[in-house]
Amino acid sequence: MNHNIKIACCLAAALLLVGAASAMTWSSPKMLTGDSYIDRGSPEDNFGTEETLWVTSEEEEPLKEAWFSFDTVLMIDSLKIKSLEEISSATLRVYANEVENPGEVELHFYSSGFFEETVVWDGKPDYEGEVEASIDVDEEGWYDIDATNLVKKAFLECKDCPFSAVLVAKGDASVGFASKEDSGGNVPVLKVTTTV
Image (cartoon, rainbow, N blue to C red; front, side, top):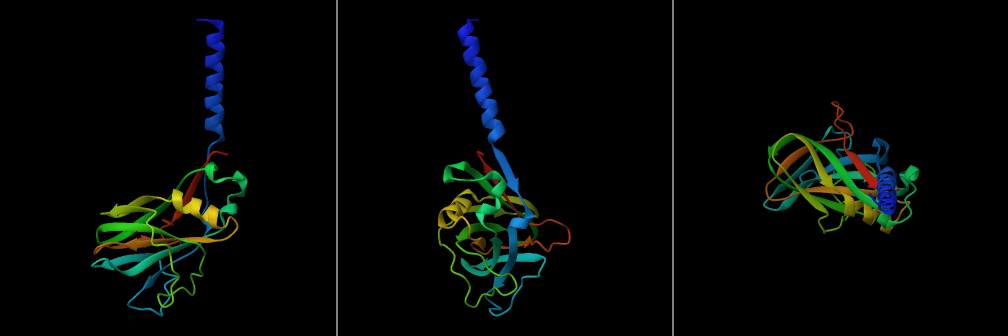
């Protein structure tokens, strides 16, 4: 093989290794500062200490919504994210521990945090109507929801502010997801992969 070609191949391989080494996936339960569900049928009741977060709808009308509050994107300080392009992907991993009625569940973005001890349906925060991602839940188990756009929005809106993810059921779906208080340890986790 030509000497120059060998050098070029070695350089290309080295660059690939450097690129692979610089990518990093980060997750921490500490970033999840609170979770709860809110219930239209009990508009003044708080469910912040429940082990199960219910997501329920009836004829396309949400009856129960699950809310997850996260610390600032700068909580990922070990990765030193400086630009939007450095966020490769993000995943919200949740565990369905009860499936009363299978169906679609949507992910929405809310540009602030909330207090799980006080959040209720009456006067609930106004999350964005745009659907960031969706999953079909048909049985108990782990589900990965693409939260890349949600985390990028949080970075753009306010890098040092808390933000929230909201799960909303479609159709007549009714699913219970494990909360951070889950006794089985199946707590929600936000995973972020970056290029740094």
